[in-house]
Image 1 (spheres, rainbow, N blue to C red):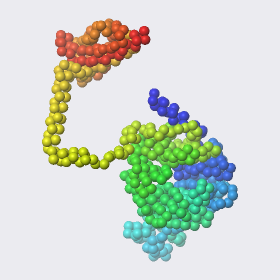
Image 2: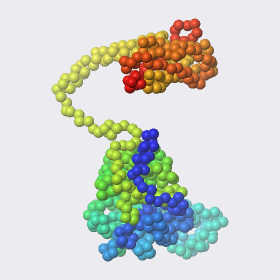
Image 3: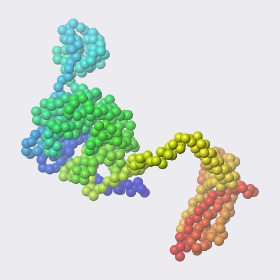
Image 4: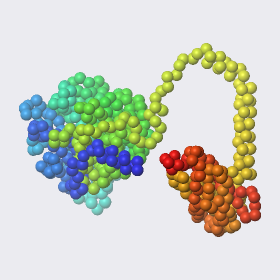
Length: 584
């Protein structure tokens, strides 16, 4: 009943605007954005579709529920952002798609500019070896041996050409050398993540720079108009996710999750990381909420950190994380984190508190919350099977601040206001220090007395068979009773079970002891047939309350062997007050 009520409460917060299970969209949160591409105040949905992974990659634009435009991409997109390049009117954002070593910039949904990452340093020894191969001084096998030696010892990694050559079979080497030996060697990195950074103004319509993370452990900040490199920052490992805040000309912070499992925080005044957050498992999601950073890890946990890397809280999740996104409603002053899980659910967390759960027909792989069309509170979800779902937050929706997940109450994490040390506290501390041995002995004596009293009470209960479970190994029984009805007539049901492994029990009787002035029973005594091990046998009898004083009493139930007076089991049934007599 409660789970149905919770589902109704969650569905009352969101409207199901659109769901297309066969939209044929395969993408992630980093390749989804919402932008006003026509300057008419109506946001479009822009998606970088991965296609099959090797073909059919496209840039798709949706208006409402219809596909408005699509452009073919030459390579797999790793990220997609919308940004304002200049101050020209009308203020229409451009779309930047990161793909391989390139950034494709689209304006008015048409190709506008292509930026290529700068080439990396080439290993001098590798260049000499290929020069010798070009001049015919070494054969293909010798070339392979030399390249393997360079790979194992050199500080500068080999180029893609050499790595491909080392993976070839012997019969294919000569053809590969003759095909590539005349071409110059190039070592090119690729883009792993992309974001935007305001240039000089924090306004929503301010010009933004592109921030890109590369496989070569570098972060580049690009000028939005000339597409030149404004700044280059270095990391200890390749970045996989990033979150950017601030302005380039004033102060900025770039929070980067790297492949070595750590989070690094870059600032304007240094080209090296300012802070480092070491995690117990690899990060799979990174978003910023206010001044705090929320990180989802592969160990099914959500962590909250300050800007300087201090851990604030931890939340345990019921399933692995598939994607994360920020939910920001400035009109309500509400900020939270959307977490897509592998159990087909999307959880909404505000700090460590779970405030909402959204059910999905499939595993969610992409999330984006923002203005879609003319609705400010739209949630766009893409699923593992290629589906597209759009939900709209109702204007009357209210999120409870308390945690909807089971667990300790929020008050448990609030620090107690411990008073300062008083004179009484100091005196007690001195007394405990001086008389520690005597106090410990007194405590042990009182503890032994409590244990003795408990053991004696337990033995008395076993000897008098006052428990609902039999302690007799020859007849292991279990009994529970259920009272049904409002009165004055009640139905009393006894459930008797033989808990033995394989031995049946015979010749049992049940007797009731009750106040004859309050109750009358139709069958106060009856026999129990053979009890097969493991089965629960229900026995019913009617009890009628004969008193009109509105009081109740206890009915005792005894289970006995034929011919013996000591009961095997005893149960005390607290009868309810007869409501029927009270109404009369």
